[in-house]
Length: 129
Image (cartoon, rainbow, N blue to C red; front, side, top):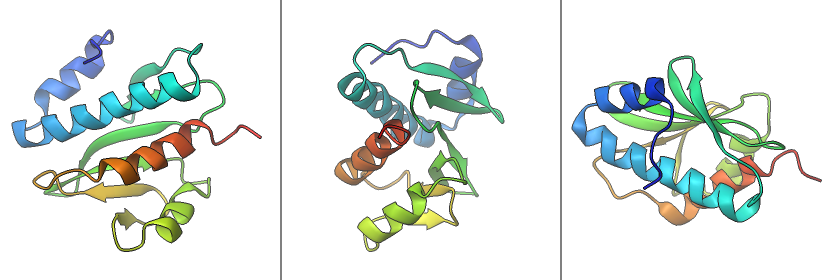
């Protein structure tokens, strides 16, 4: 697992309930791994936006991860992109969505790694043409 270099982000993760930490850390690791594949010469910027862990690279649409509502977690995308609309068309029976801004996941269930990996890759390459 990639070590956390941002103390504020590390503090947020350590304050999540334990049942949310594992899947959120899995998603974090996916983001770093996919970013390395699609942009091996770029560094992922890990920071806090709206008190949520946020990840971006140059030419990417930023992603955020956090708890969602009372018992879910989510991957948030920039709401002015077409990303969530596209994901909804691609994975209508696999993923749950919140409006045009998030993929919502149940932390008690196994993450749909294949599907969310595609979504993360699309966000990390969104501004490339």
